[in-house]
Length: 181
Image 1 (spheres, one colour):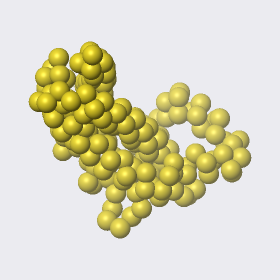
Image 2 (tube, helix red, strand yellow; image 1 turned 30 degrees about the vertical axis):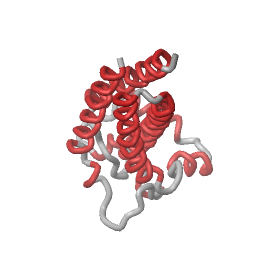
Image 3 (cartoon, rainbow, N blue to C red; image 1 turned 180 degrees about the horizontal axis):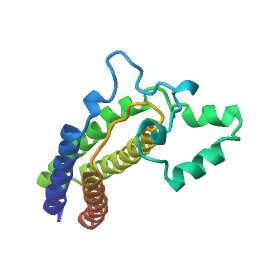
C-alpha cells in the first residue's frame, strides 16, 4: 500500500508541476511590483465596463449591493490577505510536497514508522498550504475583474491535482496507521 501512495503522490506532484508550467504565474506580476498590492479605488472598474458586452444579472446585483458599502468595507475587500502571502505559498506548497515525498519514499523503502508519520504530517501541511494558496488566488481572481493581475490556472487541472492530493492524504493516513502496527 505504501507503494501505491508513493505512485499517487508522484502523480499528484506531476499534475502540480504541470499546473505551474502551464499557468501564467511568472507573467502575473510585473517585475518589482508587490505580490499583493492593494487595488486603488480608481481601479475598481468592473469587467462589464471593460468589455463590449452588457453586464450580467449577477454583476448588476453585485454593483447594486456594493454601492452602499462603507469605505472601510470596500478597503477590507481590496486589501491583501497578508503582504507576500501568495509568494510564500508559491514556494512553500511545492517545497513541503517534495520534502514529504522524500520522507514517504524513505518510509516505503525502510518501513520506519516515524518516517511514515513525518511524511503524513508533511502531506497534511502541504494540503493546508495548497488550500491557502487556492484561497489567495481565488480572492485575487475576484479582484482581477477590477484591474489587478492574478495567476490563472486551468480549473480541470486544479480539480485533478486537488482530487489526487485528497486521495493521497487519505491513503497516507491509512498506510501509516496500518503499517505502524
